[in-house]
Image (tube, one colour):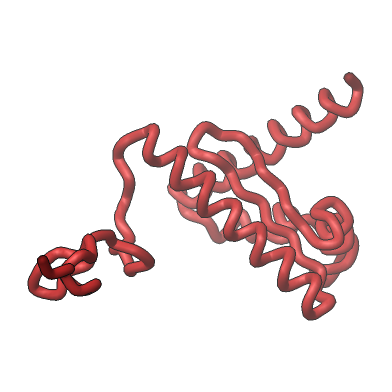
Length: 137
């Protein structure tokens, strides 16, 4: 009785194909399935936040990342913390110390750009109101 060699017992497929995908590059494409979209967002968000924090820890950078989930939830992350980085930016990062929406040249925008701008400002207002509500509770 002979014992098969280790190569003969491996789970890999014949013709040098891998049994699993492992860490292969996958093409970037829009995910249509809602449940898969949420799972992928959660995994990618964790990785993004880990890298942002690592950037701050290793190089002393002040970092803020704000991610909006497919469901509309806000996920802030920052080093040392997102609030302090954003306050610092809003207080002096814009040149005149203005908020980003004050520096937009509304007169030069077309109709489509104006509609997008209104949506962005409304989203900021909604987030501020949600934050105020959470602080009062």
